[in-house]
Image (spheres, each protein chain N blue to C red):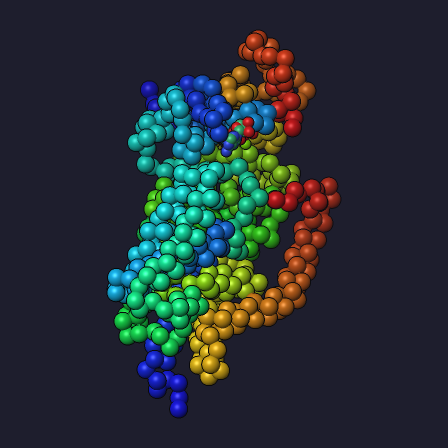
Length: 255
Length: 296
Ligand SMILES: Nc1ncnc2c1ncn2[C@@H]1O[C@H](COP(=O)(O)OP(=O)(O)O)[C@@H](O)[C@H]1O
Ligand SMILES: [Mg+2]
């Protein structure tokens, strides 16, 4: 049987001395599009950051492309879109400069060749930002900025795309563009793990949804339909021990 | 008599030129990752090296380089490990470095207070033959690093987490940035002085940012501004008999003010153009307006 692209088993992680992941199992197979859902603070970003090696696991196992994370070096196969922060660099940079950084996964210390430059333009075409090559990223709207960050991840032509809330603060027009870009990636065989607040225009693309709450997986299966109107399938059975303080999962999807 | 006929002025101008290139070059990366004042801290630490040089009768420039590199490595280690107490640890390092330097100078026979102030504020008349050789070698290192690794350094300074996920050796590159900043401090020490080194790493970059829109242009223009102010400041310092470091820094601030004034109308024009473009594309019935698009 083929190795899963991401295999996370019983993962635990702490931040600032507080357990944030408390035994997360997450498997993503080749060609799958998996959405990671959950309320704010449920540990979605931490899970994703541990997968890309930015948060150390205190327990459990992680394999990428069948290789234990510790021995995994093939980062050109992974494209990462971090959760957007307000922190832009202290110096202006153009769209082309930012997206070219994504190509370093392939070029490393080598030269930027013609094929690399074309890949950068190609990634920008995918997100409909190729007409803004020379613009400063500070001059972009939230949605355009997010498209640039996705193009940066795509510039390395990754097999696995990991995106943390790519749709947060993005206008509907940009969401449609991003859904289209993602569809093209899936069509060429890419595997996708993305953190979402609501499924939105991406819904038809998503094969499976994993819902986190307080650092635990409370749902792993088909994506919930009509988010916000119905509870998730099996909601009441999955975590019968949830305390009174625990909020229903759907709240997390609405926020 | 032309100032280029004087051997010491030739040396001073060459040193000034190299400072004008190197300080803004590494400064662009420091400003980008919001460590604008790192050079200032390293300048403090370098004084201990200068003091050691005097005490051991060794070259102050090479001793300052060695001590400053150690300081830079310690700073990076503090950044990695010393999350909460980081500030305090850095304060210890900086003020310890400065106090240590003053003390060591005082203990040595040749370290007078005139000497001390020439290192603190720069003094072009004192750039020796030996200094200029060291400055050339160190400047070559800084230029090779900041230009040769510009794409990699840009990536780690722009978004460190993303750069790590591309598989770049980010820790090593961070260390290289710190070491390069340390080396630049000693390149600049003789001309602008340890207390004003950081100004030349930051002000030309700030001035350049007023009109540049790309990283590349910011870098190039900052170097251009750096060279302009260091060379003209050094010449002025000779003719008007004023301290070189202070003259250079004041020139840089002058250029910053000038470019800021020029930038306002430029920005207005660009904003007007962007506005016009936005209006055209949004003129679709039922399309969302720019107001729906949340600004970062
Ligand atoms: N650097 C940090 N130090 C301490 N706690 C953190 C840190 N980052 C996140 N946390 C905490 O970890 C929990 C999970 O955060 P996160 O994974 O970002 O959640 P999500 O992405 O699902 O909103 C939150 O309670 C958050 O407050
Ligand atoms: Mg998050």
